[in-house]
Image (cartoon, rainbow, N blue to C red; front, top):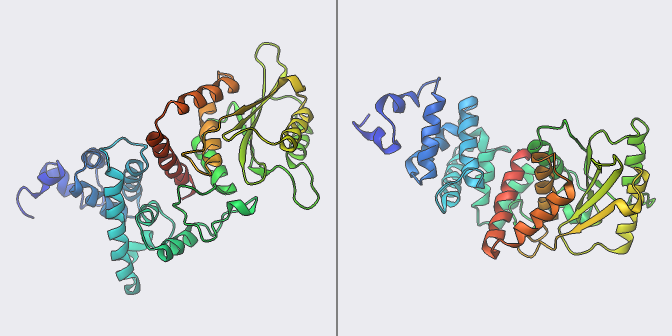
Length: 341
């Protein structure tokens, strides 16, 4: 070892040598993460090499990098691009080693955070499509608008699929004491034209007439996701319904179907509210992204009324610059997709 080389990593010699053992100190990883956040390329490179491990240290290193890449952890401006490029170089090395039975690189041959970060930096459309196919094999869709067909996984203008929304909501909402998360469904069954939301609510009411928890239903109205929420008014204990819609006002037929569903739950028409955001100018096809985001906001402040949370979010979002709205789009897509890996 070259004397003093460890100083490039902002570590002492003992901490540096520990990185090459089977029992890496987690505190040392945290130090690497802090230096990486400041743009230290040596630390970014070291974390990538550690992320290849198939143990807790590998998982922890991979998460440190992904949190910086997705904006979950704050770093210097452009840190995501530096991580992307390092991931891509590692992927290219893995491709060269693939025919050599190199198990050390296996995270770059199957769905992983490392592979996702590498794919985000690719310019070759064919390569990106090949990697998209690795990730999307098990995903389900409610309409043709959700399909990946000829669209890369990393597009900032694609519609989220059913399983993506379901996994993201379940990953972000860990405390379900006050919430019931329902699997995302299409509003109308295309063949028999059944109102599937009404069917689902009617089935739930067979087992419980009361709304013991806030009921969250991500609903595909036909190429567009909304969040349908049932809850009890704290003052009079009557059931209420609010529908969050990140686009302009829903068409009359869709609204009527949603109203019919709310009535199945015992909600009177005057207690049904539609919140329209018209927020997608800089978040194209971002309806699913917004549905997951507001569902997470509901879980963070369960004591507040859903209507107030939705209105405050729309107001705060409208104050963001176009640049910050586009950044919101990129970072939230990345953070939400983490729960699908």
